[in-house]
Image 1 (cartoon, rainbow, N blue to C red):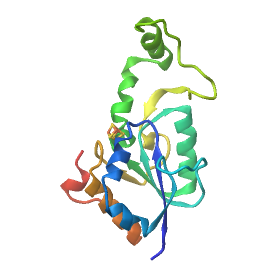
Image 2: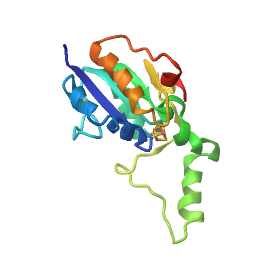
Image 3: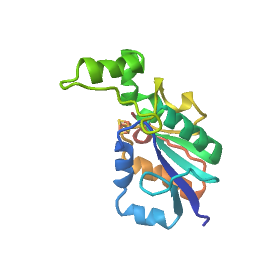
Length: 180
Ligand code: SF4
């Protein structure tokens, strides 16, 4: 069976979706027989590679770095999966949207309400600039598959990855697979 090139991406999310991926426990050893993990927060790879078969994208698009990365991911990946509710809808990450523009928000948090004298977390080239609005992934690039859940439970992730390994079209059917 052909080995698949799998990537997992961490945008604006709490890493809970990746924790759920790790909840696959011993099945990860079986998964490793069939995939090469070519990019992930779980692997020390600096540049997003070419010719990726499948990418699980956790989190919403919240800053300039996310925007750059998700565009690269889309260009270089055959099947892009919105992995978890933050990627699918914005969810927790998008809760800042109604609170106003990032500059005003940062000023409130780091200056006005700081218990000790604060300063804005600006460090060009180190701290990425926040976007005006947090967006779910599909608002920025086309998404092929939506994997809901906060986080998606491990059996749901496994069901999806088994189809990836088998080279089948990914279909999540049944209430247990698609409920939020
Ligand atoms: Fe965390 Fe839930 Fe968002 Fe996943 S969907 S990154 S678990 S808040």
